[in-house]
Image 1 (cartoon, rainbow, N blue to C red):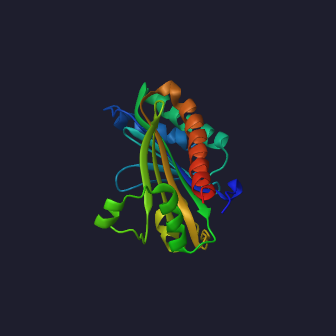
Image 2: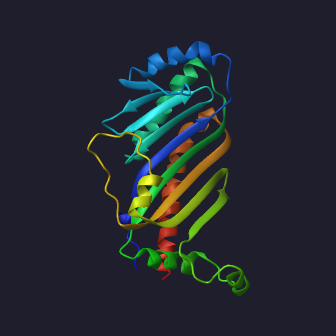
Image 3: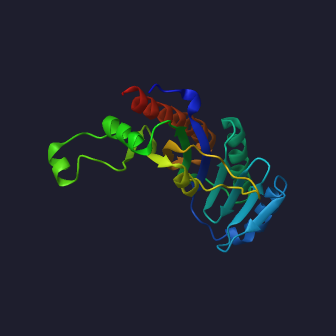
Length: 237
């Protein structure tokens, strides 16, 4: 099966920044929230006290709490849209509670590659291209896989990546991809069988002034890795 770049479907992107908590948060959170309300009409406070601001039209939300800010984007748009929203949210928080360093900053992609194979055939593709055969291990386990998931954590420069790749059926996808914004009567249509990719790019102890650079490079690297691993799997047959 030949690889088709146009078939990759990025379904969700999650951004999260973690930083040191501060006692001043309780005094400043309402002022920060009021500032966020200039851009978001819809908001809620969940049972944990996390403040969420929702954009139902563009299908994403942003949240913040003491020591953490995050975004959940459905059906993500271009990188520039996300970069702008993330930068503005971080800058708003920073203007009231100054940040110097992130304990961890991450950008996570959920993507699908629709297949015309049966599920067991898709599993066989992963076995042939990503599993190193070992006769002794086959004796301990089995040489016949009913399912197979590829899981790898690796570093590229100062960024760490966690890649998970597996074959999925349509019903599984609904459980793996939780939508940020639910609208009554709307339901995302997914392929019957697909490769599912969950890829997280992160950086620990990144400086605040590296925030935009991280989003740009993380976005670009995640796309390259997703394209590369799928091309390897599909073109190696």
